[in-house]
Length: 168
Image 1 (cartoon, one colour):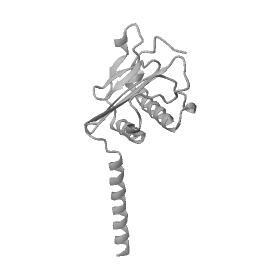
Image 2 (image 1 turned 45 degrees about the vertical axis):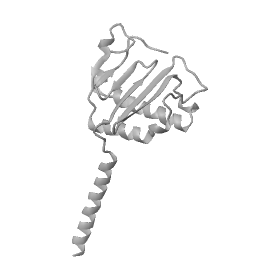
Image 3 (image 1 turned 90 degrees about the horizontal axis):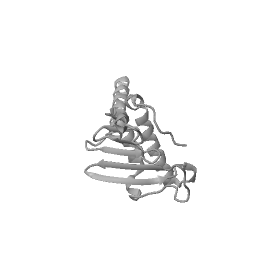
């Protein structure tokens, strides 16, 4: 009897743990995001359309565009990163390093749609050095970097040609 009760308790614990984990990673049906990143904002991805752009700074920009449908694990990870970011705590136009500049500058634009609401954070021609940013700025820069790393690790990104123009 004790063994059966112990087994039943263990099974219930596993089921509850699994249910909690699934709720955490649950991505709303209407969740979509777009990210513009890189020097001058030359790279972008829009999950609603699947359009992935490696660079707009090329002789034939169309050669640097492809379609990408993210794997569910990658989309869940990005959703988790964005949820942890708390986008509502940021203004629409934001500079994580207002007293620092870099050449060439970076542009980051993150737009998220969830539950019928769209929110955009625009960081135009900014410095992305995290050591000068406050904790909120560091979190934003880290989130954008992690999302862009997920996108740049895909086979679709890697299949695009090498950059024509390199920035120092």
